[in-house]
Image (cartoon, rainbow, N blue to C red; front, side, top):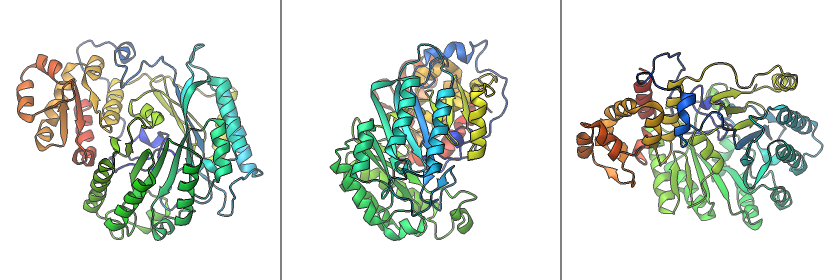
Length: 478
């Protein structure tokens, strides 16, 4: 699904998953000051930072495809979807709403201008929604064919699809695998029937177990399971059971999201954040710590705030986001990040139809004419990097934005290094103690030689990510 967070404007248009740990509000402001005397422009200097900010002229190698169809809207969902009705079956071959949308989607892809005549092939494709597994395989095939003709796909492209229990069987999954889908993201959310019902999920617990069995029987090695914590009336015992049963199912990847109560949703009408029957902030933090402990003990690497994986099974598509690399987005409400600028599509079908028509007629400028703001880009880099276990690459960041900004970040984070919420690492990945950091900060050259990465600790630092990233924003754009 489309990644939802309270970061704005970035995450509100960010294609991926819908539920992330609680973050904070960030409003773009116009900034004209620079970080260092007479610095080169971001466009000129970004080429030295291949980790977090790729050169704007490089075309994307990832594409997000939004397939908005669901059987019903879940009580926590405020994303652009089309509810087909709970009676919709697994094929939906004759549903004109799906057919018409896919045709419109393919028109959008075809009308998209290539960044250059030598575009590299796509390395990742992510079908999100909605519930993409409700779309007939033949229509998924048509989308993949348009992508192949327009952008080309590499021989080992990661093609992910979000799938909900009860929306596919072995036949459908095998057809999708035959089309090239090689990664499945299974939206389980909980292993308690009452919680699934209370969330408005269209599937039940029996369908969860059936879906897990189907994924295993079809030989899908690279698959993820989604869980939601902090649900109404969810107890620690329920959460522990969901984590235990997830581990027993042996997915190669697990995504753990904290419930966000959004205005306009059924939960937004029924519940007030922080009040019963929603868990308290302390209980939510305990849920997060429990997930980190149990999944880490089971051999999963906590490589991003909400993401755990077995070695080698990171979601390559989502790493595109966390590394701040460019990507295409196609479909209702999706977003692209191309040429250093982000561009979102309309969230309603009628407006989206008009957008596609205007795109075909050359009346839409997907890239815009506004200059790239260095401070906005720096905030993106810090925010995204600190969501990951690797953290912020200081060498790359320094080359783009200057050593004085790095020094200011360290001064701001010094108390949190002492408290253990922030970790400084040398180039070998060894933690630098708070006492040593005090010495290093006395010499700018030592900072450059000794400090290579800065990251948040797991789980305490990740839990404080709101405040810590906000603190960095204050340093970058005081």
